[in-house]
Image (cartoon, rainbow over all chains, first blue to last red; front, side, top):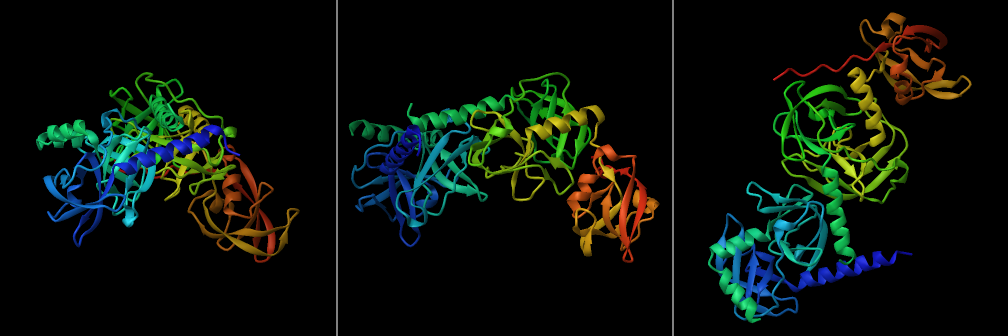
Amino acid sequence: MSAPWLEELAENAADVAGQARQTLVAVVQRDRGVGSGIVWSPGWVVTNAHVARTNRLSVRRGDGQALSAKVRAHDARLDLAVLELEDEIGSPAVIGDSSALRTGEWVFAVGNPWGVTGGITGGAVIDPAAGRDGGWLALGLHLRPGHSGGAVVNARGEVVGVNTMMNGPDVGLAIASATVKRFLAEAGLAKTMTRLDRAA
Amino acid sequence: MNALEQLSDSLASAVQLAGEGIVRVEGRRRLPSSGLLWAGGDLVVTAHHTIERRSDVTVGLPGGETVGAKVLGRDPATDLAVLRLPKAFGKPLAAAEAEKVRVGHMALAVGRPGAELQATLGIISAIEGGWRTPFGGQLDQFIQSDVVMYPGFSGGALIDAWGRLVGMNTSGVLRGVSLAVPARTIARIAQTLVEHGRVRRGYLGVGVQPARLAKPHGASGQTTGLLVASVEESSPAEKGGLLLGDVLLTLGGKPLASMDDLLAALGGDVVGQAASLEVMRGGKTSTIQATIGERPAPVEEEEE
């Protein structure tokens, strides 16, 4: 028999997982397999640059709907890319403040690991300011091929990072949402995407 | 806050609380390790295997300040070293009650190899009673967890969900196993290191391996003894007249059926004492007198 709060915990976790899945799309590169993307605002998807290496991309939603997408920004060094969809689909993700993350707090990563749609994995924040510039999150969870470009969400379901790669066998690395925001501003897309966000 | 948010927040708070007593230790080339403020806050306990030099060890405090530290003593057998700081800093972690830590409990490994705290989450995988390390040290408990030992986490804390110290993490005792040296063992060894600079262990000077006896021996009915495969020069064993091929049966009346029995019989309390060794030689049992020596310290590496 489990304590009521443990059941509540499980329910909360399932809710946050469901919320995280709402932000998820599959990014299909012809002949290069399937990665993940985050619906940052309606019609706009943030993903990894290595998931968007060709301009012939399509994006698939959870319900199976496929849309063509154009790369609007691409930075291989940051490993970030922005896609504009042919339609303003999707509800915007709630973007969290990655700089407020605390060491030890709980996060989930959502993506399409090994092509499994909407796979969820969870773990604790090892270091909220990892990497040389502090713009990365080191996480105690396992990212797999297909997770790349998907969202890391905190216990409130807010997007705080972008799944990017593993560092050794047990440490997942994600680009912090603050880094993404800077990238969007520098790419001149922040306003466009926010405007669409408001219109939605 | 819902239950998930509370869990997440509590874990982060436990890390933050424990972090006030966790320092960075720079005692080797390249990668710093972690350490625990100890006793009055003027001592640091860390993992022996991460201290490669005797002098020029620096400690990074929770507040960001860096101070020089002196190596007071070290015990390779339990992988513990104690450093002295110029004065008291910060607040040592409170220890968890050893009896209340259970297999399945959540636990966090917390380290400070860089400027900021880092933590990994897992559960207590195994707890067993007293356990002897491969280097002959006695731990009060064997505590294994599945936390990921991030580089530089050795010497840091394994904490419970309330931020209390379960033990000091080390990956230097068992390869591939996240082992924690229990808080109680740290307290015991640290005190000895502060007082004497080392932990004395008895020394006989033999290399042995278990060997089956032709027939059970003595009142205990032991079926194995320890075959002497090597005798070190000028050692208590050589002076006592032990020969290659002898089979050790008892030391001070206690059966020697395994390596562990021998290590247990050679505690620090028997150094300098005469002990009688029962041995089997050429099918006959005889008794040899030997004066137990003190195990020499391992050869220190060259200073940089």
